[in-house]
Length: 334
Image 1: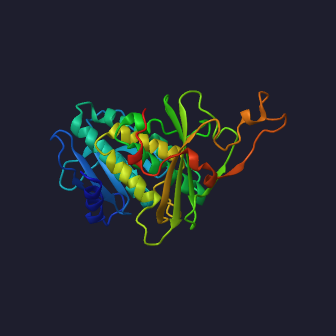
Image 2 (image 1 turned 60 degrees about the vertical axis):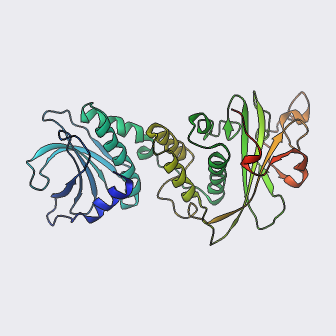
Image 3 (image 1 turned 90 degrees about the vertical axis):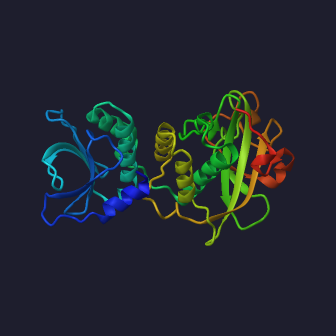
């Protein structure tokens, strides 16, 4: 079932009038011996009921970020009472993500002959990062930075080759935003109404430092706020999710990286901000490129006591290092 079909099925189910009762519809396309039901309770909480054999060891996870997993007996419609593992979403703001985990589990039940309990545990494991992590909401500038990284990844290198998006680093411990043995890329995004090259904030002495191996590039994305623009962080995330729809493992990894980066499906304030792309610029960063790094202070590195340094880089001074303004002007080699 597609995400839209799942959403529609839950939406049309009539909530039972009696507390503790449940109304459900069997998910299509599954083997006859693998009944799975989409259901709602009297509070209109959404459920995914996976029938398991009698005597199956219980699966239980209580209220982990709005996901509740129990094992109990239910009678769904006119079907005989049976034992089910019940996945329930207790927060309407999490419906989209609950649909995604349900789709993942339905796909596994259709394609695998492993016991249903094993498939449920595997699916919960794949999604555990989301359901157990309460990330701080993305700030306005953090959301803009993530938009720049995803824009570069989808438009300049593509996401269908795993080697491409595997280079995306989502931890502060990494020196650059994208790292591969052959090259690294630092991404900077700026929102400005000016048509001239933007000024970017460089956060540390290491941000434009040479990688341990390979070549360093700086990708600059210049955007402006535009109420009529079709681009937004949410739109870009959804586009990449669609790109990866045929590769569940890649999709799971991408979602895990989004979570680590602080993105959440429930965030609306900054992820829906409409942005018009003004300019894209890819620079090669070499020894003469305008930057401040530890080597700028000589062989001894930064002076004793200097533990951090931030500065601003005006890209109008970097014209001679500009390599491309469109992805078709250069082919990055991984």
